[in-house]
Image 1 (tube, helix red, strand yellow):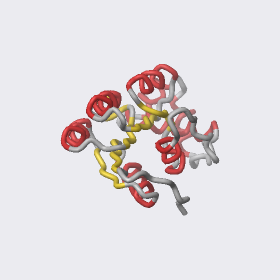
Image 2 (cartoon, one colour):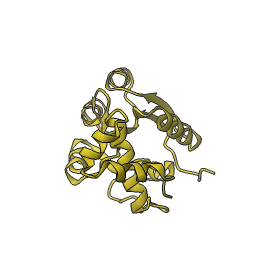
Image 3 (cartoon, helix red, strand yellow):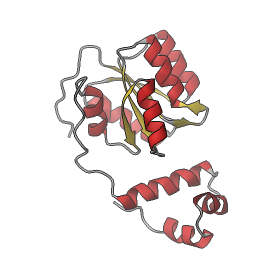
Image 4 (cartoon, helix red, strand yellow):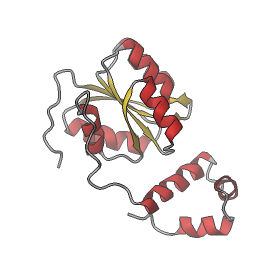
Length: 182
């Protein structure tokens, strides 16, 4: 059950995410928390939304099929400087986190992010850091998500995924045959 949040009057929120299932699930969860959500799956869709009616809030995926979410963060920052944005990524690293914050994002979260964590980050006061997640992903789960993302980027080619992850193909197959860790 969503907790009651103090959502401002201008509650427009754009979610830019190329993973359809995650985009829809997050959209429903944030709608239930009081946001007026519009969904986009590509840079082109997000650009049209930002140019026609820039939202007050945005949740943006870092790597998209047609480019980088950083471009949309920068565009939103220009079109609506007060827009509060959260960057999501399956590839968390310091360089991209710094780039996201410099572009105007207020926080940087690993996917799959919990809707409560996204909401807390979006609604955090200017000089206040959002509280740490209640149930952060385990290290095993983070590893699993990373492997799955690389596998998807390699068009579900196990040999190519194993090469990019610098692991033996059979080891990768054994890992992928198991259930996802909690």
